[in-house]
Image (cartoon, rainbow, N blue to C red):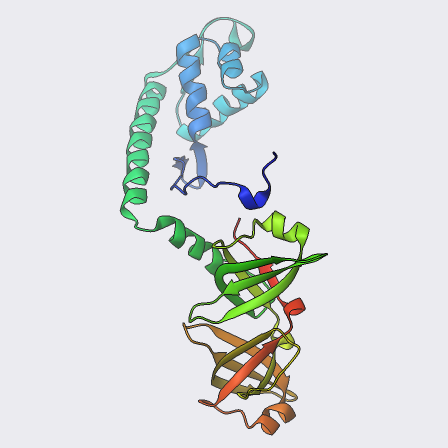
Amino acid sequence: MTKTASSKVRDPLELGGSVWLRSGTETLGGSARIALLAAIRDTGSITAAAKSVGMSYKGAWDAVDAMNNLAGESLVSSASGGRGGGGTTLTPAALRLIETYRAVEREHRKFLERAGAAIESFAHDWQLIGRLGMKTSARNQLAGKVTKVTRGAVNDEIELGLPGGQAIVAVVTHESTQTLGLKEGSDAFALIKASWVMLMEDTNAKLSARNQLRGTVAGVTKGAVNAEVSLSLDGGTTITAIITNQSADTLGLAQGQKAVAVIKASSVIIGVND
């Protein structure tokens, strides 16, 4: 049976990185160029070295010329025959450069291993960093965990549990559920434009809108026509609504007042960190 995206098992997150050598603002080389130098040392031939590291002959010579220029001294020298023949050797400076790079690379690897092991809940924090760096035009970005997936005839209902105990429901296609790997317990976030959020007094009114998030008005900022209202939910989540000034006055919205954010399930976009 073929595995779907929702059943894919992800490998644990680990720290990674590469070492690059620079000369001023120019890059002297990284692992690829050092590997080329090492291959020249081992084979005594540019042609054989280029082949062993998966580089074209011209690309190898261009890299060598660049390294010679940036280093300010010759790293590679050719015996009689030039580029078309003869042996190719490394200068003492190039041999030292390889050893220095390998030593730095070993220490860099040890540092990454120690850092990864020292950071408790690294995978969770890394996902959080990813969310913090996310840019979207939707004003409301609510992170949570999928608490329920209900399959329908055409679309699925995704229930996302928010910090503080409330939940928000979104309607997505079957394809989106599979593509995003949505299942109970998985991390996800809801994107909601502020203009899609309606506000009402905290009553027991019955509405067709699936989402009714209760909170406390944290602030009301009025403009020429519309007002921006921030509603604080339990658990530290804030949801923002854009309504008319007249609506804000009619509801008597003021800081500290209880209110309910009403959002249609079809207005909620679900996303995940890849």
